[in-house]
Image (cartoon, rainbow, N blue to C red; front, side):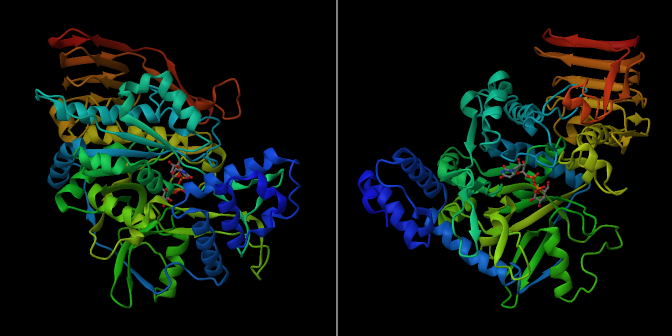
Length: 603
Ligand code: GDU
């Protein structure tokens, strides 16, 4: 079939060509020019084939076969969960700040030292439409801490908390970031320009996911790029790639050798994510779970996956995320005529998966060794018509990281932990225009709501610790109605758990709605602070600061609206629809070791 062209190919390339022929891809070679004509392009084609082959568990042949099967199922209208009956699973529902929560937090904060963190950050964030990478966005604009910086600061603070009082240095907690062609270079630059935000160079590993071949029909014929007849068209395979890239990197066995027990997966923009992690890790450790998915209460039909128990006729069952568009039809098909509906709590009984997973490293490694890093995939072709014989545009296989438990056998301990939404989940996914159209009462998931959620969570935590906080105002930014609480931000060094907060806030503290409070440093305690304005406290270099009976009054940082369309503002500000006007502030900076008490001061 390649005729005289065989002479320009290596034996490996000929093997790849044969594989493609055997897998029904002869169309790729029709009209190949004679040797001497476009030889460089032909070799370029085989380089790409080799890359696609090596990046997929089982190679390109396995990809084509899996695709053919999934395309046939899709054509036949087969639901991946056909034959399963959904029911409400049992999980751990945590109430922030109660005894049980604090026990889990304490256990989890210690367990963090035996963990590795994995951030999936290969997504382009098309719905958000930000020109940069999402992890570089400020999580809030009071301190301008980016998401990546916040995540790294928190991991370092967990490490520092575990090292306290020990004579030997503890092993650095590893962080893996999965990038893609869309995000890799910018992620490297962000880390380089900021000296890894304080992490050691070998503490962070970047693993790049690769795209997969596009398919043009139900026979899984590989599609060529419309603008380059020697380039296979490719598209992202999804965040589920994280399991394959981790497995192929060899990191899992290295981690096991040095005593890592847990792997925590998380996504690119959730300023609250670490608020729920210590407790959830505690749940995994104390219940010895193989899989623990973090979840929040979810309104019926809300566009996040629901966690459900699925049982088959033979009694085998799994606890798994079922995407919202599959959950409702599955319920209707199995005797629940109304589908997914809210119960008496006002929420769906199926909690919402926020895609933060805690996996036990030993069973995770064992399972991926069986599958060679592969997890369950799906295909979502857009058909031209009801005959389902041709596609509007090429398709490809996709996979989601939360589908990892699908291949586990039923003896695996798969659980989940439900946390309050205000505490644990405020992603930034939607652009201002789309967020403004979200029906009232539903989550906006915009840069505006993501930032305001951080202030709200911090205020609510302080309230639970006994601080008197003036309630929020309702304001509209970029057409989105939002609760504006006092802008309270603390660095992870100041507090990682509710216990930390309770230890550091004493007496009768009061914070007015117009206030901004930023706390940075692991040894700052507040006692009888009255704040009506902006106050920044930073303690470094071993200083221990006790603020006692301090009253701070100034004009503070006023929030002023910014129009999304006003290009005179930078994008990060425009997209949230407000900026701070610094009318007045008090800054206290301590950098000398030893105790320092600020008492009976009015400023
Ligand atoms: N991502 C990758 N590679 C990809 C695609 C995405 O690394 O090929 C990363 C993104 O950067 C992001 C994460 O994966 O960090 C999630 O991507 P999206 O925010 O686009 O995720 P979705 O909104 O599609 O949904 C996912 C789950 C849902 C629900 C939701 C919660 O699939 O079930 O849990 O996150 O935020």
